[in-house]
Length: 169
Image 1 (cartoon, one colour):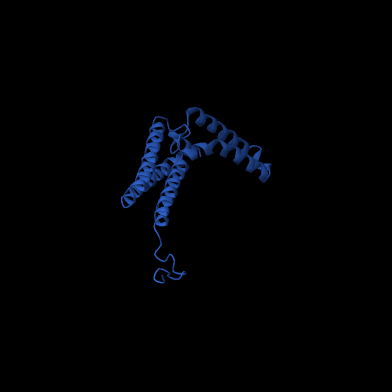
Image 2 (cartoon, rainbow, N blue to C red; image 1 turned 45 degrees about the horizontal axis):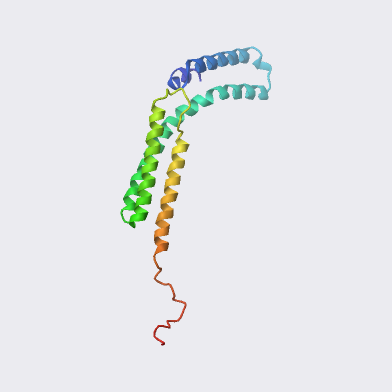
């Protein structure tokens, strides 16, 4: 963990966080070589959990950076795909989908600009899960609009069960 902290995770941890974790790791290491010999498994687990509480936020920032980039690519692809699919819709449905795509794109642009202005050692303004959620919301809305397109037309088999009374006048 010490080497990751000063290499892999360096830009995702503030100086204060790195110092605190280094101190905690040093104390844990000393405890292991002194009193740790005679401790229970529970004591080891508690020490490990204490270290994890300090390191997890940094690991989460690190891991989410790549996940955020992938989620961004996925949302942008979703927007492009839905804009293309809107071309074959009625004007009001097309406008609704295009507007929702524009809103999602604007939201993403604003959040990413805010994110880019922050140092990596701060928690993200926008997590990959936020972007994935926005993509799911957009997909759902577009599916509803596309679904309503099919229900707005009269099905061809409507009235099959009823006898044709038009010629019996």
